Image (cartoon, rainbow over all chains, first blue to last red; front, top):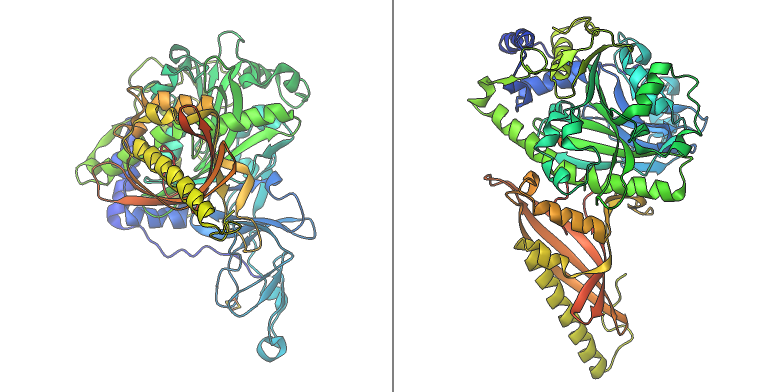
Length: 459
Length: 180
Ligand code: FES
Ligand SMILES: [Fe+2]
């Protein structure tokens, strides 16, 4: 069976290596050099070779390909793959390239296929990836070892709670190890609802900024009070601005982070999911602290390094209409230097009533996503950061990530009962510093980088 | 959706009625587009009927024999409450994404109209929107076909339903902060 390999052609220039080592120094001072968000062909090429193939990239949710033959196109960095449930029932991730001249064999975003015939010369592959036939097969391919010339399959495809992730580096740890303690917090939503399914295919929209603006901004609670002020003003947000700060940032290590809004009382419990709905699910595999967090959680946002995020919270379009929870997952896909695609999947527990299902889907569409009112404002900030950090003067700026570290009132919680380092409140900025620390390690380290553990003491 | 021109109606009288219908409808669509281009959002809201349904389904790249439109997924799926929310948001001082507003210029064409009854008009049109933001010269063109249902009311024509069939699989812009 042919192996799928990462071509490593790049050595880091002395100039970039110096800048990258400077990032580590700056992070220790609570600073991030602006150029990390800027257009920078060498940096982007390095991310494509050293970051995306080596991390565990989100591929898709199990409910997207329920039937044998179902497939969707997915990307690792900018590389195209076919995520498919083969006829033998196994879920596979096949590199979307014919082994003959490399033409792309799957040209549709979604479909159901028993086989793929390459449009160029007609090499044909079963949906397991196996090379089965070709035109004039004996004359042209007589003697070929078909077992050797199937589609390249990603061997490291693993799932957690129905979320499939892939990694192209044989030296990487398992998905479970890579996720580490981030799974503990992901479980309070994805472990509770064991029957989640996607509400249709993902929305895709092009943002004029770097993919890093995605992970930096999505878990940022501080920006709600200004960038999204209009939504407080019109009464769309169920959690008032003064209360939005309450809760925690949790740094679980490996570049992952979680932000959770905790109510002082339980007036919004379980993110607004009806109690009778919650009661249908078992919490057996959750510990007391997870159950407590889940009960009091109003907003849950998590980011798995580097470009996968999820969000659960209640919202309304009109203060007279009760808020309804939405749940979604997002991917921040690089699309060239200074461009990214935001992919948005909305999720619903399969047990939800038809009425609740529709309400949750509609509120998600109207607020969060390619047509949502939040994303309109987020896009503006993303573009502004990218323009500054691509400019001659902007590139040399150091951006302030000191809140909760050198300045502000946020503090680490000494006796946090869960894993990771938790702070109170949610406007602190240590979480992103730890994400950037992990990012630098991937770019600088030739061998598989150390996954930075959660700090005992924030530094 | 489209019908051959003159299909069914051959007489000069019917052609006259068809032309009048087409003209009335085109005037409405052009007026409505001008309100949007001029950011007269409250005035535009006044052209929507209370039971408005405004939908932008997700389109995917699929084989010719398959429907590229997703029956169960949308970029936007709005009713009057959510349209009012969007427009009241634009009126706040902090709708940053649309302040300064996207510069738009809408071109409406290829209009096809039918009137199934005396109060209803089905109008299918194409729209191209010049879409520019900020002080840079780059711009985007958004393209779509629109399936509208207009209703006659005492105040004139009102938009009862609009389905926007995007020509884009991936949105070329960060989000739909404008109406198509
Ligand atoms: S490139 Fe696919 S058959 Fe030749
Ligand atoms: Fe935001």
